[in-house]
Amino acid sequence: MVDVGERAPDFELMNDAGEPVKLSDFRGKKVILYFYPKALTKG
Image (tube, rainbow, N blue to C red; front, side):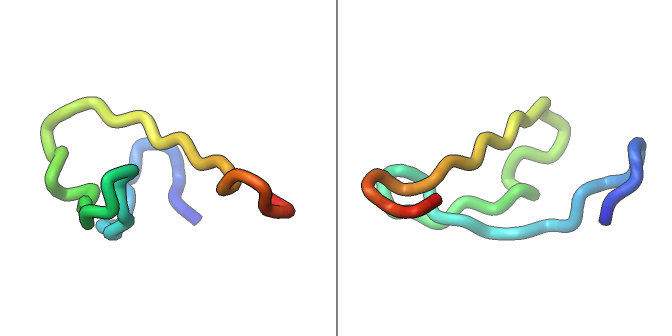
């Protein structure tokens, strides 16, 4: 769990084009993370 004001741990996910993207790639920029279930899954 990350407390308010703490830095988020670095992690890597695939973007919508299937390319890996790291949170650290956006250091110094404002970032909004939006997670949603893949279409036709029980998300």
